Image (cartoon, rainbow, N blue to C red; front, top):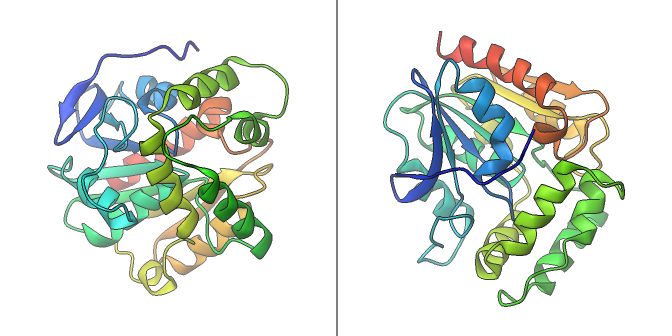
Length: 259
């Protein structure tokens, strides 16, 4: 598909791409990206539901946070977009926020899907992500080559080109703020997972080296109504690269949560 810029609406305090009518599905993207990263999901899910794909604070057309950033600051800002029963779907950093929303706003979150979510990074991965966070100055654009190679490998593709464009045009301060929180967090607390009241889907790619299948399975095992799905051949950007498989899993999960 073409990963072109789409019109925005104001949803709560954020800019968002909206589509369709019906039960509400909230989509939250990862660090450095923007709502268009959900393009394939907006088109597929918007045929039967009301999809709201937000620009995370400091990304796309959404203003940055006015407070010192931590995970709760992102969660509470995005929570202002919730107006009724909602299935919340997040990718990477967005998955952190989605899980935090499901744990702190139980009256609105009918189900949560965490795609490529981290949980208890091994020491080498934690060292690497913290070093990258320290390298960001919030003023200059970070070189996107390393993350793009991790996500896609070296070969060109429309998905890689789209992500490169978004990473090269993100606000450096917004990127630093979000990435710093992403680096500091290590996944939801076990006690919070055990008390998660809504259905929870943990999905990642079989070829994902950072938010691994083992992480998704571990979180799903703790959640009372959790399950893990691993997409064969997929890596970090599976909502873009393996959209058909991802969309089929999401559509089935949404109907379980919002019949």
